[in-house]
Image (cartoon, rainbow, N blue to C red; front, side, top):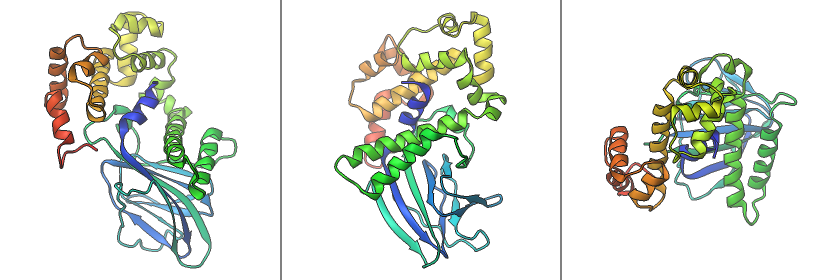
Amino acid sequence: MDLLSDVVALMRTGRPISARISWRAPWSHAFPSAPGSASFHIVLRGSCWFVPSTGEPVPLSVGDVLFLPHGDAYGLADDPDEPLPPPVGCSHDDPELFASAGVGGSGAETVTLTCGYRLHPRVSHPILRSLPPVIHLPATLGCHPELRAAVELLAGEIDNPRPGADTIVTSLLDAVQLYVLRAWFSSDELCTCGGWAAALSDPAIGPALDAMHRAPDRRWTVESLGAQAGLSRAGFARRFTELVGTPPLAYLTSWRLATAARLLLESDAPVSEVAERVGYGSEFAFGNAFKREYGVAPGRFRRQALAPGGDAA
């Protein structure tokens, strides 16, 4: 898997939810703060306003996409000057993968596709922490055609569920998420500012990151990673640290342990097998590294997460 695919696989836990909502004026809806979750909205018909908890309202029109990666509070409304009602949350434990609903009065209609999912409470990636509270992708003609196509397919499946819809909707939600991240990190403005956007687009550092993610179990060295990047050992280490914010082998260790944590949460593979799959030659060495990162040994991490009331899905 490449880096963005890995990040999407790492970030989500449990069953996603989605809904096609018909809002009829006058209407407004407040979404409460939901730490540990992410959501996005897509305007399929009409127009509305995004009302952030701080800052000015933002007009939205057909085809606009909003992604909220940190679970901040916000509102949607047909009129930004009307006060929002008390916030109403939704349960990510809802057994329905997708639903349709109508809200509001009898006026002009706006239709949105709303999707949300929980994030792993103990497993994260710095690329997610680097995202702003809101990513707004306006429906500019000719931009992000793959995202538009995925949105159209997703809306069609939710409008008219047929056999196989559960798998198709889940896959399309992943696709939309990846297209949003791809669009954000390919922004020319971001790529000139350094950080993860520049790292992903860098002709040397991007391939090295990809290599680490595709083969975390390989015995990488700074020299062999530099060879992947076409740079000298010193030049690679300097450029990687400048763009990613951490030295190459420190990032590799962090990624290996995050991958191991996900495997512990989502599989019943023995700890020794998990250690081998993420590049550790011994269970002892893996256990020590894992405890430094997560504060507990791998076996205890798994037991705590899967126990009743634990913090993993």
